[in-house]
Length: 174
Length: 203
Image (cartoon, rainbow over all chains, first blue to last red; front, side, top):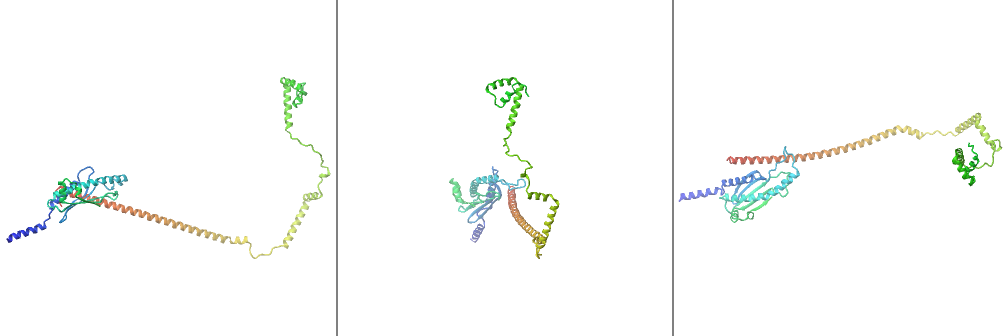
């Protein structure tokens, strides 16, 4: 009986120190995110900060990525000046890519909720994308940060119900 | 001179005094007589020259130099004699000069202790010139100082403006350089991390 009690106590202690979300599953999500944002697509993103995931017990997981919506090179010895027409073009292309990025983030959140088995259904999957811009660019209408969060259970329900993910995801642009 | 027998008729014809019946026959004669034609031309030229002279009235009286009326008056004769005589003229001149000396001696002006204005002016001219020169030099110095101050002010403002612009450009350049370095650092970090992931080296 004593031995049984000791085993039970040790199990409880071990369970208290182990994270509900394994590092391996989070790393899989990070790799998915990195692959998604450096895909060799036309007009690709420029990944400047690889995905980093954190688990906050009681809240859920948060993944952060920093990227440039387009490959924009700063002035350099081979190209000293950026013309106003180029700045306008960059701004226009970036505005068009914001909805595409948000859709990609929603899909990645759904993938993350499926990948992280240990994450409780009532905890959150949060994703933050920090958007890098040069000072010479036109910042009008462009957020510097996009934050999305949703409960894992709601994300999985939306998928099974073929519902629109944007209805269960809270979005915040800054 | 024409020797034609109708020379008298020709003269009357030239002065429009020929009878009408003779005029026709004379005109027929003129058509065949060059001497009479030439004579008629001469007569007409003479007539035209005479008509160009102005009419003058006939003088009512003709006088001679020996008449009494042309004799000069006694005063005029004396004046002419005076002006034509060198001795008289010299004597008169000497008298006028003597009278002038006498009058001048009796009406000599008192010696004035105050120098005439022209003398004062002449004496004060160097001082005045020096004062003018000094005033001009002072004014020139003031203008030079003002121009110098204005130039210095403009130069200072331009320098400050230039320094401000240079400072702004330098700050913008520093921001751009920092931004570029940050960008390159992030790119390098990302490449490093992804390369490590690809080769299986996890941080």
